[in-house]
Image (cartoon, rainbow, N blue to C red; front, side, top):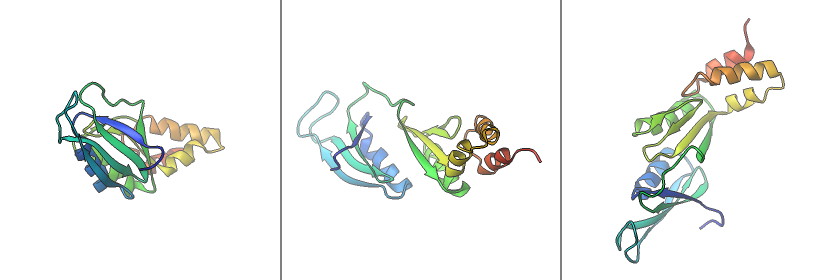
Length: 160
């Protein structure tokens, strides 16, 4: 197990979530499933207690801790994408598998975990030294759910 691991709390669905992430993203895998050696407040002996997995190379531990805590936008995975096809593929996988759309490239998976599906083009546009170009790209992003790279590039270029 990695030295620094992100622990994500689930209500009995850690293994399902980890397997979905491993199937959806490259450099992702479920590496171990651990069953509870005894009863615990939200589960019984033998049920899946923790799942070791990685998402895009990031080490994670899914903990089936019960219904006490929910995911929030205070934590999200940001996935940088190279083109519109990759952006659409990840967005559609998350939203189309019981998730929900949000604004500015954000969406939630069916377990309530937030994802930022962010084209590199958007990051480059918002860091443009031409502050007017950066603002145009930012303003365009603010009107979007899933990021549309062609619209970001057009906004960055400006009228003309």
